[in-house]
Image 1 (cartoon, helix red, strand yellow):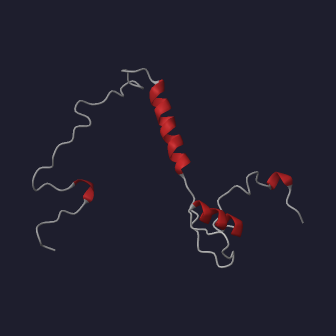
Image 2 (cartoon, helix red, strand yellow):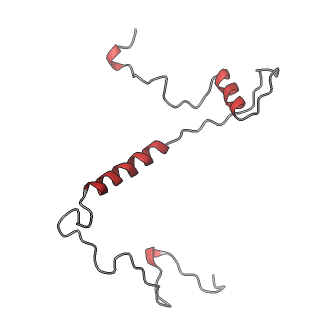
Image 3 (cartoon, rainbow, N blue to C red):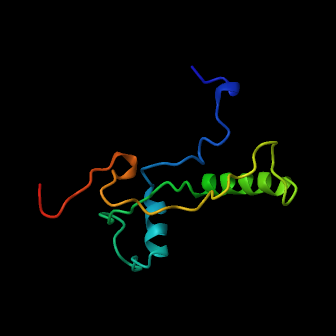
Length: 111
């Protein structure tokens, strides 16, 4: 029985695959300059094929910049969104104070 056309994926052959064909492995070895012409195509060395997700981060940053650029310069984006006085200024922790974030303080050599 065949799969209906509406259920087939458009980019089924474009998606990330963990296992490469022999030709793709040879091509990758040539790009890495690890392939010598005339060697056997049997027993090829392993080739790492990692999925890269760099595009998502760039899109998110571009969207954030576009949203920030859409607001009028010098005016808050929403009423009451003005930064508080001293925002962004960090103070040094007082001696003997608990560290922020629930981290454990270490003292000298005591364990």
